[in-house]
Image (tube, rainbow, N blue to C red; front, side, top):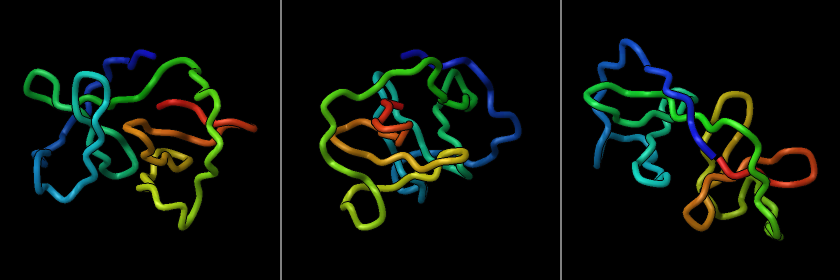
Length: 98
């Protein structure tokens, strides 16, 4: 799954260890959950790191929700859950990889 290159303009906060936002390993970089978006450092600015396409997470037997034990990250109009190094989001009757 790829992400579109959409620059997050006017981002004056510097993300990194101890910045106060959830850090999410994502392929070859780290995303930071900030204001309902996921940001990544890219050549001196921050990009919105949003997946394109639909990538269902097969064989996911764990149900995510309040109290499930995984980090919940508000993301747009839904909540992603950090599980096994991935971000999962409920979609219909399954989970998508984000």
